[in-house]
Image (cartoon, rainbow, N blue to C red; front, side, top):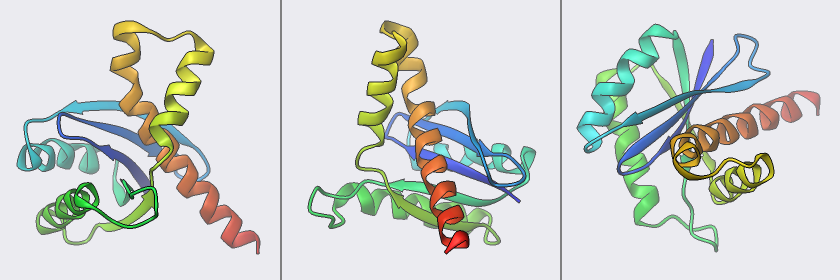
Length: 142
């Protein structure tokens, strides 16, 4: 089963896909969206084409670990996805530091300007998914 990592934003969604073994996450791009319904409409073909069985959504928690309005929006998006595709498994992972990590990586690699803006959402989704995959591996090893 492939797993899709999603960094959901108001204007763009970053996407990453696991390999079949669930070992490695790779960025597969971003979707420009105009609202939650448009996001669901655009992500469904990606799910179908890649035979995705699970989605890992980055959950933007407050710095104290509580859920705020942004987290509620992510959960509403998940509910809309499930209405269209009820067999999907959806999990959440704390995404508080993913954009910072993505920015640091882009600084190290010298990615700036338009190229940076085009890639940051995808890289954030890749970090979200790889973090999830690594946590799953650690659980299996214990």
